[in-house]
Image (cartoon, rainbow, N blue to C red; front, side):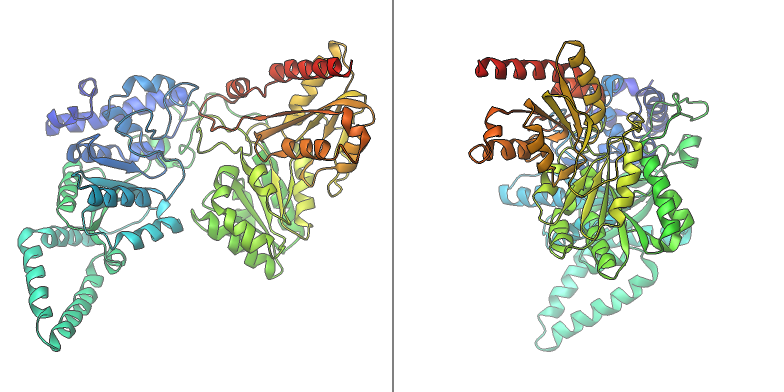
Length: 632
């Protein structure tokens, strides 16, 4: 096998053309076999095999800097930098990450995970190289989807001023450019980067500029004429007008063609775009037919492409999808907004039924929030469905454009809490903390699937900014008999006893049910409250609870700093002088420690973080006994 020869970053340079073709086939087979067992991002990685090989032929890693936008497509890069054995534990706790990680390899120069960041990071490297006088290449790879993000355009605008070389590879797996345009463009690209052409162009322009009075006018007129002619033939004129040289497009399956264009790009002073046409899922028919399904896939059967463990129960996204369809039927003012995540957030059905009321703004969360604010100001009822991890990119817009104006925008926050295998950049563990800091914001979290339905309906009729956060995975169907109407800022008693009160938010209510049962078996009297609201929390209920409880245990799947539990602690401890009852109350916060959480199975992560059932039981008993001994 050719792949067995690749153990270090430069080994690929020893291969012949025939071996490179074989290597590409072997990499695809390897990825399909491994990801069918571990799960992971398949379609995007299959699409960039030849592109990655070409990049490694041109670059010398780790000296040169290669930055992958998002990083979903970095698996081939990991293989070519000696991490073949790591695929056995891909995305598992303690194993290899599915994204580039600096701590994992010197060949990963920048951690990524969110979209549209690679050009900014690459520009930082390029300018640092100018300042330090070092000599290395910088290449940022960005997809056509990521290029819809505003941050990418901010970076392009800034990059146009760069004096030294900086290559931006546009990994385009969506646009369609005909062969004749592509061929002509490739020809013009080669011509425009030839030494003689570059030298002549510079010489002519400099000479004309020195002619008094008329010189500058002649240069401007030539540039306008040149741009007009180019616009007829060159698909990259948009970039050219920004001051960025455009090369391509080139077939994403042509290793030597990509390599040639990358070498030409490296000779240009300043920023240059290399446009590569790739195909998601290339080489595996099921992924080619259904690239969205194989974007991030669970373990699957290679023969059929079907999941090894088909989902048999509804998850929270499914519940949201059903509710949105019903709301769309009932109220024509309801509109849905997504940032390139229609399938992931469950809006596909809404889109199919109400296409005129569905808006996909691309990978642009900041725009999505302010756009939703405009919809709300005009009298509509916008629901912005978004993953928790991605919403944090729009904090400023939430604060300034929605909450200052107190506009009724609904934030349907999917993947709130631990999400598992995607790791630090995707864990939705900060939203309670950062949203709680914003005046006019209300935050809810459902205990089960029925309460999610009730909360979304409540939120749509709410006349102010409101967020409903719910976790990834199977929807809890317990506690069906507890379904009191939702009242602003009010919690829900599930079990009312004394001594210990479990005050649980959202997904932690299910955990609290098990914890309470275990405490009861051990002889402890224990109450359980479904908090429902993270902000505002139920002060009256907490005041009432102080009369019969000695320990209040707050439970949330959010970081402890700035979270739900800290605010409950402040309520009790900060009011001890005013409320005599509070002087006997102890508060135990169960939350995620103040740290980034790596990838791994959610149950393993919960145990490691001390928010699993066994950990909570032992911590609760210890805190209760400690409080009792202090009282004695």
